[in-house]
Structures are given as structure tokens and as C-alpha cells.
Amino acid sequence: MNNHTSLAMTQLAYISRTTFKHLNHASGIEPEVARILRTSRKNNAAKGLTGTLYYHQGYFFQVPEGEDVKVNALFTKIGNDPATRRSAFSRERESMRPISMAGR
Image (cartoon, rainbow, N blue to C red; front, side, top):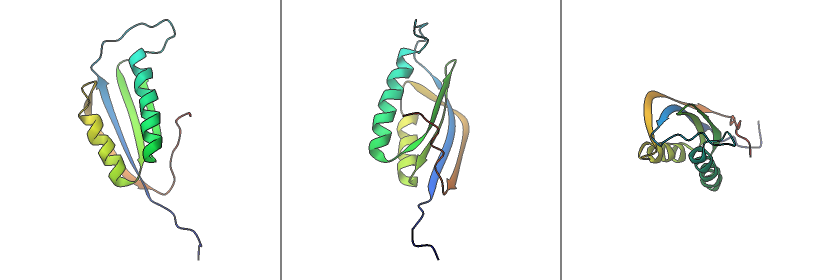
């Protein structure tokens, strides 16, 4: 028998479309996306959430992961954010290991 306990992780994948005006920034990074990424990293780390966030041509693909209650609270918060509109696709699953693909 194992002497350590594994915590099941919930992963929720979804796609959303941005509602903010897109700028062709010289650095190649959309300023609003950079702001969202900075805020997400700070807030998610404080809540013990990990995952990945991908942006391309006005769409976000995100897979937040962590404790079920925290992931669902984040999904609700994002759904109420006026900067994005959720698309119909979403998938939820439990996993024993985090994907942790996002850079830190």
C-alpha cells in the first residue's frame, strides 16, 4: 500500500472568443492578451490552479485544472467576463496528474 495520498484533479477544456478590439502590436503580443495572461498567472497560482492558456486570432483555448470547486468557480468567473464569449465546446474530466503546460 502507498503511504501518500493522490489528489484528483479536475480539468475543464473550453474555447472562447474575445470581444476586445485587436491591435497589431509591434511586439507581436496582443496587449489585452498579455494583461489577461499576467492576471491569470497571479490569480491562478494563489488559488492552486494550473493548466494552459492558448490564444490565436481572437480565440482562447484554455484548460484550467485543480480542485473541482476552484476550477468550476474560475469557469463561472470567465463566463461572466465581458472580454470573452464562451463557445459551445467544453469538456470536464478528472485526472490524477496535472498537465502543467503553461510556462511560468
